[in-house]
Length: 272
Image (cartoon, rainbow, N blue to C red):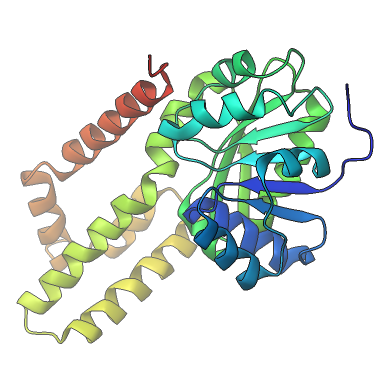
């Protein structure tokens, strides 16, 4: 039984990513047609008041919204899918941002024919600078991908990849903001060690990080070229880069991303 009167979007899960997408969509087009579904009554009430959208139960969300965006933690996905199975059909579009969870696992839990799109967003969606990467399940076609892409474009850039690449995407851009925060934290601590006040060190490093990111995005030059442009022979930058290489920072970062990739694969396996 396919509901033909459904329209709009229900965001199921009100954590950081769910709220980021909710706030971005409202900034772009207002709250009309958006519902939120959150298992914590306190959190549901908070989101409803903050964004002016109805907070509804799961069955009501599925009855009223055609697009269901699953924004729960991977360890909670199976419980949610079991509850969804009786209230969704092939007339819905299910968009999942649960890290590491493959579309086959979602499709197996839902009625046959339900279109599923898997998305890996990241937290800079909170400031409309997110990187979202999506893949189609076996029942999702180009129109479904187009619809999911338009949804995620509200909070940043969007790319499409084969689902086999999603664990690598999770390790690189999904977890990626934390790597940059970690680096910035270390640089601020170094500034304090060198005698700068914390607020000044933070201002210097954060603006430098922002400027470097914009240069990488907009200059068209490879990061190696940009780094070499700062690295005068025998200068301070070369001395710093030599220390980074001596301490194996490049190898450590690559190993960290490989560990994140392995963990993403683990999260995608059935919990049974």
